[in-house]
Amino acid sequence: MKKFKFVIAAVLLVCLVFSVACSKGTENNFGKELLTVKSQLDALNGLKKGDADIAVIDSVMAGYYMNDTDSFKDYQILENIVLAEEKYGIAAKKGNDALTSKINEAIIALADTEYKTIAGTYGLTTELLVKADTVNPLASASDESWNNVVKANKLIVGYTLFAPIAYNDGDGENAVFKGFDIDLAKAVVNYLNTKYEATIKVEFMEIDWDSKEALLENGTIDLVWNGMTITPEREAGMSISVPYLANKQVAVIAKANNEKFKSATYDEFVKATGDAVIIVEKGSAGEGVVVPSEE
Image 1 (cartoon, rainbow, N blue to C red):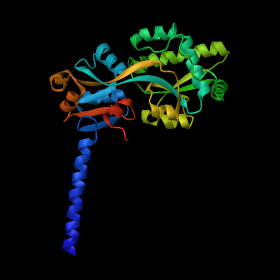
Image 2: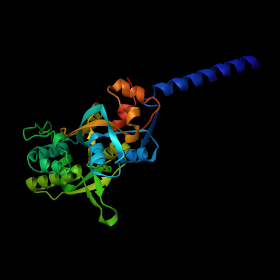
Image 3: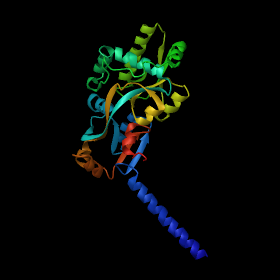
Image 4: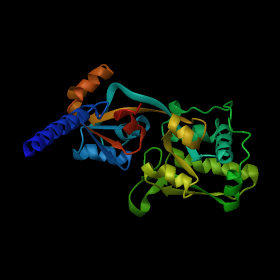
């Protein structure tokens, strides 16, 4: 009997080992290991510290840090490889369509003025998606979400540090909080205050990106306005604005590793990254392109 139990245990152990080995081989779309961190900036810093070989982040952010700062002068976006093309949207709680409608209305009204001007400040003019003739699909929304913001005299916007979308320019007490989404949110609120004779003040709250849905749901924040990728799952669970900015998911590597990872096709990229550690922001679109979706 003991011998029989030993054989069964041995078989189970072999099966377990085989199962783990197989799962490791199919865990990611590419790379051998995935690390998740709290923000895309943390992902870049993890790459810089040597925690990972490749950071998968938004092209909007990658372009800023690779071209406009000295902090990552030894790093580059991997050429020829676009892991995903996507669009950003602004999210309110599911059912709060009247609030989302007002955000849409304001951005469309500002399409040829502040929207373009702010984008130019941050080098994002080619990524703009809203035009003066863009249709507001929620124009007839009549729930109380907009009226509630007006009564509260405040609009709480959730964000993470993510240049050039939202970041601190400078250090310490002299740092200036700014960014494309930050400046655009202020312009939108100013437009709405003027048109509807409201006195809304916009408040910015730094959040854990992986908790954004819960924070919307429990009313801690009114909007997620932080370069959020529009996905079918998010459209089903949130009230999302018209797409307002284009983006891509790209791979950032050390320039010293260019020969190792450079690839002409996605298949070549997958092969080249077979032993690579990938780092992403938890809950981000970047994580979505690394980890295969469940069918």
